[in-house]
Amino acid sequence: MRFFRALLYAAILSAGFGAERAHADAAFQSFLQSLWPQAQALGVSRATFDAATHGLEPDLTLPDLVLPGRPERPPPGQPEFVQTPADYVKQPAIESLAVQGRKLADQYRAPLGAIEKQFGVPPAIILAIFGRETDYGRAADSKSAIRVLATQAYLGKRKEKFLQEFLLALKILERGDVKLADMKSSWAGAMGLTQFLPSDYLKYAVDFDGDGRADIWKSVPDALASAAKQLLDKGWQRGVPWAYEVHPPADVDCTIGVPSYTQPVGDWLKHGYLPAYGRAIAPAEREQNASLLQPAGLYGPSFLATKNYFVIKEYNFSDLYVLFVGHLGDRIADPRPQTASFETPWGKVAQLPTADLDRMQQILTARGYYHDKIDGKAGMLTRAALGDYQKRNGLKVDCWPTAAVLQKMEASGR
Image (cartoon, rainbow, N blue to C red; front, side):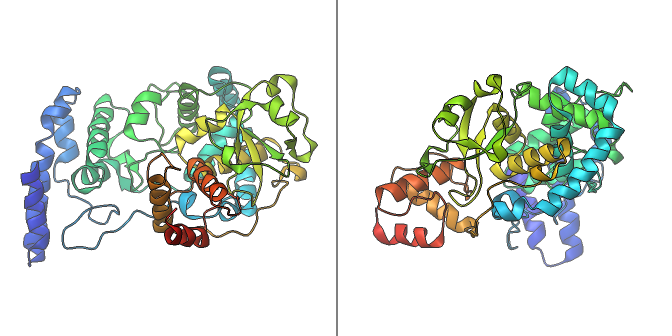
């Protein structure tokens, strides 16, 4: 395969655009044909393989590709990782989606009820995922999934991942679940109304409308049921809220806000964590284990995150994504004004650039505070590690990454 890639690289660097295009396409086709044995092993017929790959050209406009001689185009910054919590969970956006979500809840009342009965996931949660992922289908994908996945498998930064997804997309076509022309995706290969990669589709897609195929592209019941099945298979617990907003005690230690630190909700309440808006928490709910979540460190709302919080996080590994989906779900289910926002307002904080967060994680790792991947994202583990650093070095402990703290880290050597 290195030989084929070398051919493509040479083509890209050649002086004549026409020759470059022809050589690049030929090399890309050679790469695709080399995948036939793997596709065949998955049960893909030659007819399906040829129909999907004949004349296929790489999409060099995609971000996150590695093209020699050309500047790297990073992927579009996911708002979950480049915005502050206040910017990401904006009430006007939440309310607009909630209004439409309530309309869809009425429109699809029967299938949503059946989905909840079978999978245990409340309608409001799966509608919130639908709204966040594709604006209830109004933000339609326009790219060919086959072309996107093939290009990423050949020139992307995560070739092995996308190679497998490309082969699984061929398997979906072989099954006849979707026509090649209708298999649309995002630039990253996620497909349908609720954004599944091919591997997700093959594991979780459900034919809920009974037409003989699981159509996540056009059938709302199929897409919503598929999302619910994924949540259930990831561990969704029936009847358990995603989280509770709480007011922590004044001496709250933000360094305990990690998934591994759990205790029953009732114990959190005994330790001074008071439910927002005076909410009454039922005895059965008090027995559920929860973790402390403070998305903006000490500068915003605090939550007790249940098992279901982390199940939603499997859908998109971002605290802010879960916060958005959970809050939107609450607004869909309960439109009363007092539920329109979090009781504790967001403080004014700035989001540290990804490169600086990456550097902070490297320093925290080198000094023994952080033990997870370096990804430039201020997740729960990063915030807790930062708080531990602040605590041990006599700084204000707020568990929020700032340029000032990073400068102190780089200057101190401790």
